[in-house]
Amino acid sequence: MFETADLLIDKAKFPDWAAMYRNVWSHPESAQYMLWSITTSEEAARVRMQKTIEFQKTHNTYTVYDKRTGDAIGFAGFEQISPYTYEETGICLGPEFTGKGYGKQILECLIRYCKEDLGAKVFIYSTREANEASKRLACSLGFQMIGSEEKIDRRNDQPYVLQKYILKL
Image (cartoon, rainbow, N blue to C red; front, side):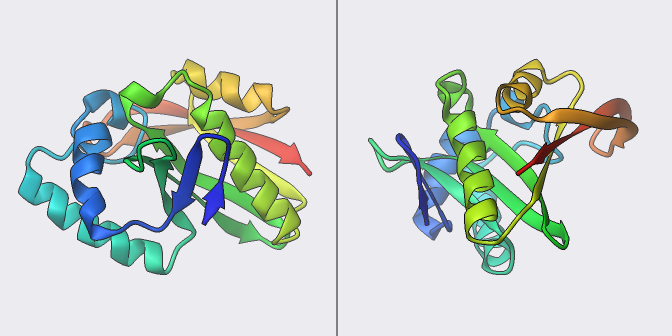
């Protein structure tokens, strides 16, 4: 488990399905820049939570909780892509929880853990070119853009540009 000023970052528990459905998975704006589609029913949210729990068992992916309420409000993760190099694998917060500095707390926490506990020397961050808030976040922490790549969103076959940023630790 990780902790920031306002958040706990930990592995999901099945009862979190309701908060994730309410706060994140049912909102198109949460999925807009991600690679997943919204969840449209409580039953689908229960199934999704079970899949999330199984996935989190073998990956460095986590559920984000509001410390004040204990509610699940998002998710985040990272992976090692080469020796001493780690990359975030997605940071997502429900729309009611954006614009509060939580994304910055999450990214700083992941970077700190990778550097201090895993010996990372480089951290990579990716975002869609159209995601202005995410680009501002990267720049606010000193990331430098290292390239971009045209991609196709498999949900709707629409093109987008994925930008990659680097932070040397």
